Length: 405
Image (cartoon, rainbow, N blue to C red; front, side, top):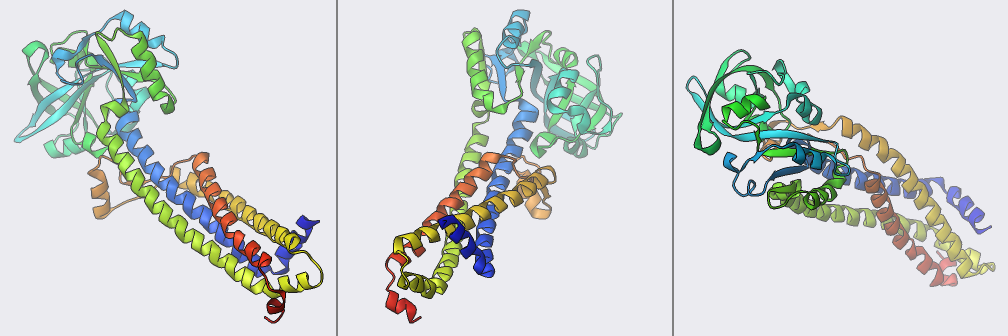
């Protein structure tokens, strides 16, 4: 009976009820949208620099990460590969050899990261063939190379031109070679795009005078949330006197710190938004309560108990807030999904400043039901706290004064 009365009371004044519901809907949508954009930016940053380039977990020779020299590389063995592949949740291993070299074309020179890769396997990990904007992808027997689009622009190179590379090979050997440019790739992270040179693994091993050698093994698995578990499993199975598995958090602590510090500032901004939302909702509740004080006084005067009236008013608040949250979630989901697949593209100075951090100049949202649910629950708590005011007003209401309003 109390619920039926509450439902009827809500729609006696449709304008007032719609204003209250709309304020809750707007609160849920704003909070969800803000948080989804923030987490989507972090997801894109990690995906571009980690997931689609270095990988979430790598295995190295024990001392390699402290001194990234080819002399600290590893000799590949079938037993090592079998141990890694037999680890739970591991789906594959990509062998890489990488080092820095000086690239030259005409009068232009630039330091580059030369990465020897297994063409077919790397394509399945970082989708390299679809990043080619000019030329063609190579195979494992090729002697040609792929270079980043920004690097090609700086060195004034085009497909078919030759690039001179000079660096240091294994055990102090001089690494020198002239390689035809087979394709130009556009990497998502600008800082990678301006320095990367890809070549087939065998070609790179010959260039660095390191046959059957590698500097890192990239571990492939589907769920990024399993990163730490897989890293721990590998370290428990590998000979840790020779090898070491590392997660991206250990390999890129700067990025992790950047995300954590930015997340704190984002949460502070979100808390300010919650305060604005709270004042907006409370203002709506205050307006509704003041308008109905004469009504409350009349009902108490004709015999309704204050506690029963307070319970009915609480039901009204819960029904309106629940409707607002449900509608807010319903509106948030398509917005979040749309901007995840069609992110906002930045331009001008804003785009340049974002690129300096190694990110694409776009703002995507993150599709996560946890984010939506968390914001909805937060708004629900705010509305429940705001609903305490009309309950307090009813219990403290002076009937005589209320009838004179």
